[in-house]
Length: 335
Image (cartoon, rainbow, N blue to C red; front, side, top):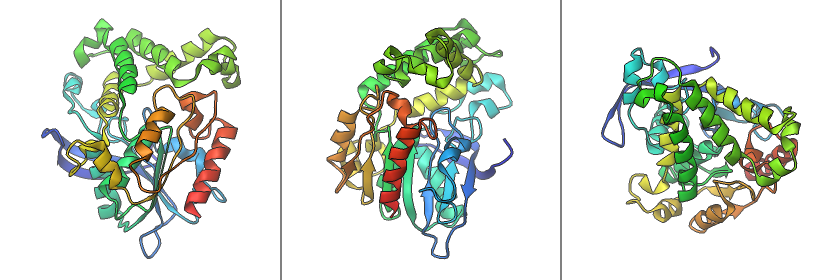
C-alpha cells in the first residue's frame, strides 16, 4: 500500500520494559483539522485490518464525513504496515518481536495525533473489535481530550471466554512444525489454514450456519466458506498474526497508568459521551460483559445489534442493515 503516511517514533520503551527499536506508525487521514484542533475522529484498526478497512463508512453525507471531520486511522502494531515482525530484515528475529500492549499502541498513537498532527480534542474515538478496545483506552487514558466514545462489537478488556477462543486459534497455528516457534523461513501453510478454519466458527453465530447465511457472502457450501477463511489467512505473516493476537489476549483497560490493574477504576475515569454497541449473538465480545463495563462509565448507553452475523455484524461496510443501525447511532452521538 502506498496511500498512507509513516510517523517515525524512534526507539520506544514498552509497558513490558522491552524496547521496540526504530518504531513507526502507518496512518491515513481524511479531511482537514479545523482551526481549534477539535474536529478529529480516531478510528484505530482491528485484527487483520488496515487503514483501508473503514473506507466503506467514510464519505460525504455520512456520519464519518471528511468535509466535517478530520478522520485519523492509525494502523495497529503488528498489522504489517506499522512496526511488525514481517517488516524485519532478519526472518529468524521475527519470533523475538517484543510483546506490545494496547496501552503501548495508544500512547504511540497519541504521539502521532496530539504531537505530530496537532489535535487538541477528539470529537469521537470509535472502532470495531480490537479497534473498539483501543477506543476504550483512548477515552480512559486521555479523558480530557476524548469527547465521545463508540466501540462496537468490543469490550474494554479481553474477558476469559474471549481469551479461550484466542488460545485455540493460536494453538492451531503453532502446532504446524513449519512454524518452528516463530523462526519459520517459509510460511506455515497448514497452521495458517487451521487458524482460519477454527476462527470461522467463532466469528459468526449458530443461526448464521444453521440458516446457511454464508451463501449471502458468495459461498455455495459450508466447506467453500471454510476454505475462504483458510485462504484469507494464508495472506498473513504468522508472526504478525500472533503479535496482534498477544495484544488482544492481554488487553485490559485496568492496565492503563494509574488504574492499579482495576478495570472499574479505569472505566470510571471516562468522561466522554459513551454509547456501547455489542451484538446479541457475538460469541466473544458479549452483551453481558459490555453491560458490566457500562455500569462503571458515567452516563453510558447500550444499543445492541440483533444480528445472526454475530461478531461480524460490526464489520465495516459488510452487512447493510447492521451498518445502517450503526450509522444512525454515530449520527446521534456526533449531532
